[in-house]
Image (cartoon, rainbow, N blue to C red; front, side, top):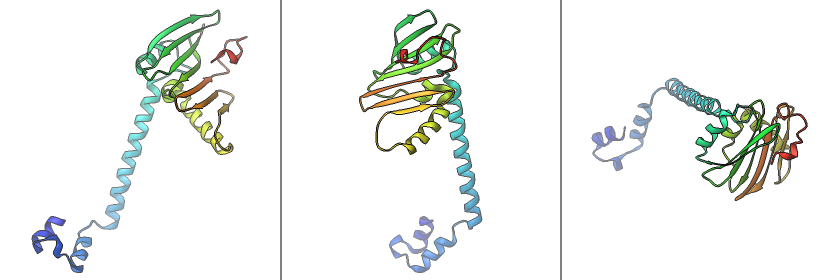
Length: 191
């Protein structure tokens, strides 16, 4: 548009009121602009849903099977620090590249029933919580509206319990699925 006007007048500094009118007349009609804008926002929304859908499907930690522990280790660029076996469960402790320690609790049936973390940063909760990230995010948003000020975030839903607290460089959190916690195991063990 500017090039056409420049060629007509010789310089863009010579623009007058008539030139502004000719510029606005060269824009697409309002209904074409609305259609283009609507199609672009639909495309952007579609891409966002695809990306979110793929990331949730690709990481099934909490509630996933024991194979998701190795997948999480790879995604976090972490190192398996320790694996502890207890009668009803095993704890896979890994250290992420960020320095945060993540523990994944796996039942004797091979399902991840809890995750806990501690470190300088909060791990990627979309990855750690897997398919439970969306219910967590919705409950966290509702809890934020109810509470005043700062402090720990506590979510107690029938299918998900999560606690997150701390401040930059010192975060602690845990999430577990009450229905998958082995019988006789007290949730205070998850830390």
